[in-house]
Length: 297
Image 1 (cartoon, rainbow, N blue to C red):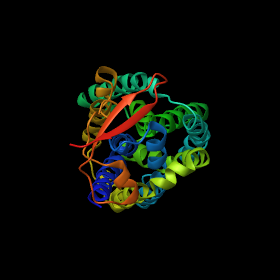
Image 2 (cartoon, rainbow, N blue to C red):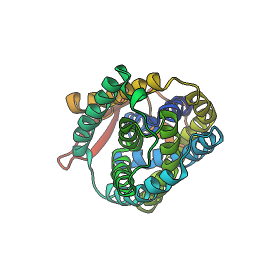
Image 3 (tube, one colour):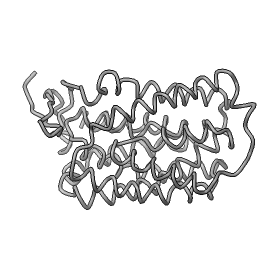
Image 4 (cartoon, rainbow, N blue to C red):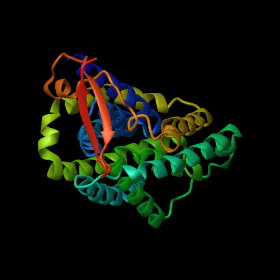
C-alpha cells in the first residue's frame, strides 16, 4: 500500500505539472514505473491507460477556463491518435530504447530555444493570433503521437514546445489545446497496448488506478493555475522543464534507464502489498530488452 500511495502522489504532482505546462505526466510517470521494475512497453502501457482518465479530466478543466481551440484539437489529435496506436502496437513487440537518447537530445534543444526566446521577452512581443496550416498540425500530431507511445511520454514536449515557439496563440491556449488533444492520443495508445499487453497490464492494474486517482485530483487546479500565470514566466518555465526532464537522457542514459537500485517492489506494487524494501537491480540483454532481478537489501 505505501508503494501505491507514492505512485498516486507522483501522479498528482505529474498531472499538476502536465496540466499547467502541457507536458510532464507521461515522462515523470514512466520514469517511476521503470524504476519500479516494469519493462519499457509495460511502463508505457500502464501510464497511457491511466492517462485516458487524467487527460479527460484535464481537457474538461481547460475547456471550462476557455483554454481550448477545438479546430486545433481535431487536427492534432486525429493523426496523433493514429500514430500513437501504431507506436504502441510496435512497442508491444519490440524494444525502442535506442531511440530515447536521440529524442531527448532534440527535446533539450527545443527547450533551450524556448528558454532563450522567453527570457528575452520575444514570445510576448511576437504573439500574433493567426491560424496554423492544417498540414503542419497533422504532421506535428503524427510525430508527437509516435514519440509519446514509444517513449512513454513526449506528446507535450513535442507539440506544446513547437506551438509555443511559433507565437500564434497565447501559452495558456496552446497548453489547454494540446492537453485536450492528448485524450485522443491516450485512448489510441491504450487500445494498442491493451491488444498487445493485456496480461501485463492486468497484472499492474493497481498502479494504473493509483496514477489515475492522483492525476484526476489535481487536474482542475492545474487548469485554474495556467489561466492566471504570466505568459513570459510560463513559457520560460516550460522550456526549463523540457531541458531538466530530458537532459539526463543524451548524456547519462536517462534517469530511469540507469536506475540500478530502487526502493519499490514491483511485485508488491502489482498486488497492492505493503512491502517496499526489496531492491531492484536492472540490466539489459543483448537484444536491448530490460530485465529485472531482485535482491535483498
